[in-house]
Image (cartoon, rainbow, N blue to C red):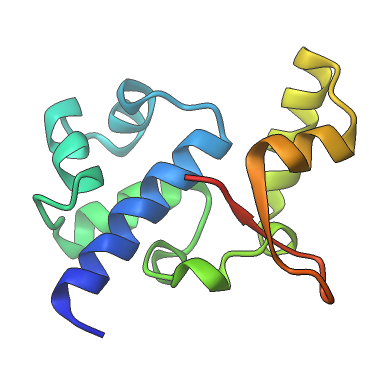
Length: 120
């Protein structure tokens, strides 16, 4: 894995986790006590945050720092309890069935195991 791969994983995962919780960049930036432009630069893989900022972002997203660096194929719908809460709020707000929710927000990465990957 190259430095660019690590940055790409980090930027993609922060954005994915933020969107799954229906947070705007402004919401997450406020929670993590960073500026919106800095968060935007992180999500675009143009800036790399310090360990302290990584910890604040992870805490704000209710995930571990290692989750922020996970490769896309390792992010499964069953791995994160906040995803269940996000589904509940989206299902309640938009009256989607579970099947429609999964179709809208996830890609099926393995037909046999039913593993789901958040769509970009």
